[in-house]
Length: 373
Image (cartoon, rainbow, N blue to C red):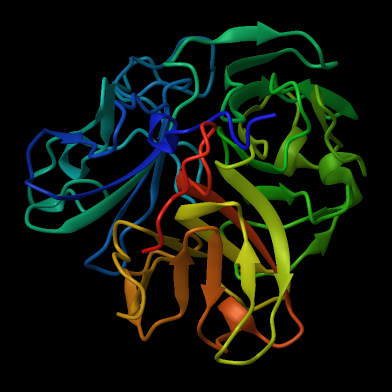
C-alpha cells in the first residue's frame, strides 16, 4: 500500500493571505494545484473586534435566500455566514461590511465593503483565508440516518459538509464519508447557539465548544452518548444539535494518511516540548487543551514562514487580532515540535487535542520524501 493517496495536499486544502482593498476582489491561491474551495474561513489579522467568517458552498455565498428555510427573508440577498467566535445565528451581512461572495476555480471572491469591510476586505488590512475542498458545491440527499441530510463530500480527503433539520428526538445523520469521522464541528443556523465539537480523543458523551475558552464538557444529549460510525453521527435531544424544525450545518473530517491527522498529546510544561508525529509537513495546525480557560489556537505555514523566527497565531474563539510571540511551534517534515511551556501549547499534564493538514506528505506515493523547513 502506498504511504499516501494524496501526493499534492494543495488540491484539497490551502491557506491564502491577502490585503483588503475595500472593493470586490478575487483571492487567488498559490498552491501546486487549482483549488475551488467549498469551505472558506477568513479572519482579519490587523485589528481586534473583527469576527471570523465561515462560509460554504452548500449554504451558498451570493445566492438568494428564503428558499426552504422559513426564518430567512426572501429579500436577503447574501448566502448565510457564521462566526466561530460567536453564538450568533447565520447572518446576511450588509454589503458595507463585506462577505465571501463566491468560490472560484482557484480561490474565492470577497465583496466590496468600503471602509467598514472589517471581517473580509477592509482596505489596506491583512487577512487570512483557510480553504477546504468538498465537491465543488454539488450536493446530494443522504438517507442513511434517521434524519435525511444534504451532503457534499470529498471522500479522497475525508471532508464532508452536512445540512440537516432537527426533530428533537434521538436521531442519526448521514455524513457520507464512508469512514468514521475524527472531528465534527456543528452549529445551529437559525438561532443563537454554541458551536459543538466532537474529536476522536473524546467520548460520545463529551464535547468542546468552538466559541469558548471552556474545557471538555459532558452533555450526554448532544451526541446521544454515541461516537460517530462510518456512515452516521448521532444527535440527542439537546437544542445545540437537535431542536425541532431547526436547520444545522456540520463539518465532518476523517483522517487520511499523509494529508490530515487528528489526535492529542500531553503537555510537558517545558520550553523544549514534545514532538507530535503527523506523517507530513504541516500547512495548518489547530490545537485546544481539554481544560478550561484556554484558547483554541491556529497556526499555518503561510503566516509562519520559517522555524526559529517567532510564531503568528489566531484564536478561533475570539475576535482578537493575530498574535505574535517568540517561537512556540516548529513545523517539521513529519510533524510539529513545541517550543514553549505556554498553557495553550504545552501546559504541564494537559491533554491537548489537535487537527492538522499537510503542506507535503512525509513520503509521496512514489517514494519521494519531503524536505524540512
